[in-house]
Image (cartoon, rainbow, N blue to C red):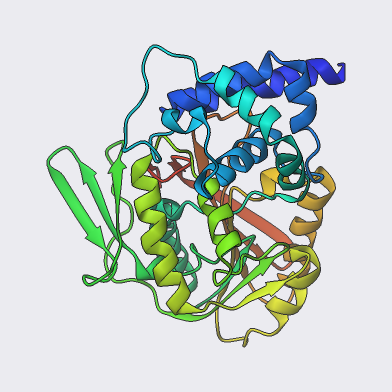
Length: 349
């Protein structure tokens, strides 16, 4: 398959992602980029492994958030008072903005990385860690691969409200500054009850986000899609909570750091390594290396792995899988299906 064909396949896939996310602004812009060879080529100058669409969209959004004045602003709901502009294609304005700010955007595209910034995924983590604790015991020693700013490392500081029809179930601290709403699909409830006790938590991140740096905070915000105003409100609250939590994030290659992170944990504390929408950026060799590291660590003690990762095959949903490594063997099972941004959860176990 030619590089051009691959590019078309990628952009067509991303249009579907935008449609599923009810993001008409980005749907039209991405469709326009997909049909514009020059813009596709411009977007391709990202760091190795970084998604072209997310980075160019975030780069443009970043400049707008930082005050760039251009007719494109009026199409962005988070910048125009929450309005969706109907009946007018924003792509011509987007293309003009890129040409106008080409030099600045080229720098942002070349250095930009996607960061975990959707705290609503903690609606799934709440349920997943309860399943882990039921099997492993407490207190849990948690290691997150790819935490970025650490917003999902403090999942237990957020309250979650699960709803199905007229029913609702709440978990997490009653006095939490942020409550995450999550629709339950199917007829099974996720694990409820007390939040598992946590012995320790650490994140392993190649590109950690410094929340005290205004530019890095704005880049994190720029990665949020402008159609979803509620996500911006959640992010602002989560940033305030995370700034006070001061989670431990070790900078570097997560695969290189992981063996030592596991080795530091006392033998009487169950270890759970977890990640969400991270390993889709890994190569096959990196995914195999992660599996091998956990298999080796499991020769000395049981290691649990909780993951929620999307794919080109399962667009719009991610299976939550719980794996256990011990004595050279691995057992795994699917606990649930999750919405990529935490909007719904279908518990299956």
